[in-house]
Image 1 (cartoon, rainbow, N blue to C red):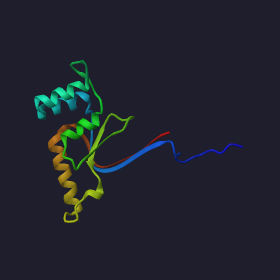
Image 2 (image 1 turned 60 degrees about the vertical axis):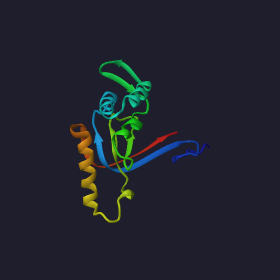
Image 3 (image 1 turned 135 degrees about the vertical axis):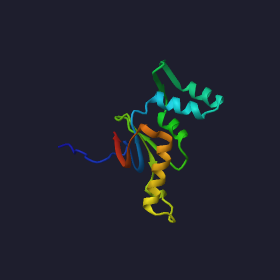
Image 4 (image 1 turned 90 degrees about the vertical axis):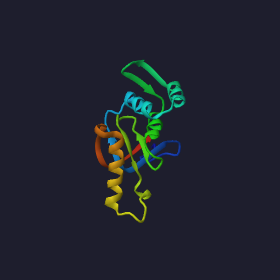
Length: 135
């Protein structure tokens, strides 16, 4: 009789996250490219162009889109892209909350900063979590 394993196996890969922040809708590769082009120096744009496939003026593909999205926010933020989802999840881990700030104030600061950067592209601000298993 064969044993059926129902949990994670040692040669599998899994990842998970829990953040307070924004689910950014429709933030496709073109949106990221346009946002970066407003902030990057010409040299940085040259580097970005090396990792960007431009199929036409509306269809772009950037290798490691979540890595480039991190360029739009401060280093305290995490950026997650789930393969089966077209949204980016951008926010802060709850363990990063400083001891000297109230929880509600911490959340409002995140909301304010992300709204300033992404504006109408934000689909939802709140708690986001995911656990992915590939194995």
